[in-house]
Length: 523
Image (tube, rainbow, N blue to C red; front, top):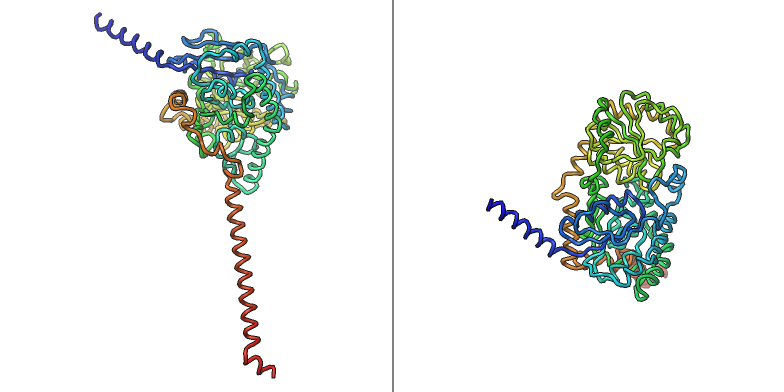
């Protein structure tokens, strides 16, 4: 009993020490996206469990937060919800030219949330913090909190980094072989790929600042501080960027120490649970389950009726294999739903993908969703709709763990053929298992990696990982001035060489012409 008492005392003292040494961390997440929040939520909860005091400004307040975790401002209701709020038609149109939509709706408009009364009270009288964590998407105005609070900014990119995020942290773009998020192909192999990738990167970067720099600078000066520098200077406060990236998924690329890959963090730390009824249904699916979801935003039942009926016909043909289908309102589905299909407005996606009965995942190709399938080794059928979804699906197709169907080619034949291939050909499952192993095999878990580097930056200062490239212009980083000087110097050398050679030849010619022998010949 005495020994047990000592153990309890030591554990108590240890927990007090951890809490006493914890940092004060502010998390600001203005984008009203449930899928993006999944990554932030697990990160902030884990920081709190490590003993840090965590304050969060978000649209998604935790029902049962851990100790040290507090939602200080709930943004719920201040912007339109993205959860189950995007029709198939809207999603398709998003892919035509996404940059203005991304910058305006998910950037400039979100800066106006700083005008809220609760936000202004907080801004005018903030408590002490050691770091600010916010999203690296397109509302870079929130980096200004780090400038005002005089603390390091830690940015979290939930997708493959945008070009403006790459430049802000001083990471090399390496467009010769590294795909940027707006490139429609993930594999850069030919001259034309390199040309296209480079042009898209620089145009996207230019357009972001064209739409955002003035608007977001004015918002920061209006709501944060009139003395704050412009947006590009504020971006230099980013001390660390945690990215939803990993080399086994997106390939090898050069990164500065300030860019840390933590892809899969939301999958490994997910705490969702089945309802008893759904757990029983999954367990009883002896012939396997096909899981169909277009993510947290797109409404499946907004697909054209004929397309939905094509799904029905293909699903009925794979019975007794069951299908679990995520919808918002089953009353808006056309009649004739096959008996082997279960529909639900809420499905715990990670537990479904983790379940041993799940054989195939039909997905829109969102990065979060596909990483969850990758983490648990589930083959996919990808139906990409916009932005990075096309290249995401292409990656898994190249890895032999997915089949792509373009949304304008969805029919009973293409769906049934794809389902039959994945359900019956073991190569897809074997490839998924292999890629899952590569994705999960790391020296530290994604969460431990994230926490280590967050603590490192707070402990050692915002400049501890700072790249000198942050202070250079893009043409200096690309060495265009150096190459230009070398070409100019070489051109001058060649010109002088030719000039001297020409002068030498003319001189020799004159000497020969005026020599005695040539005079005699003329005589």
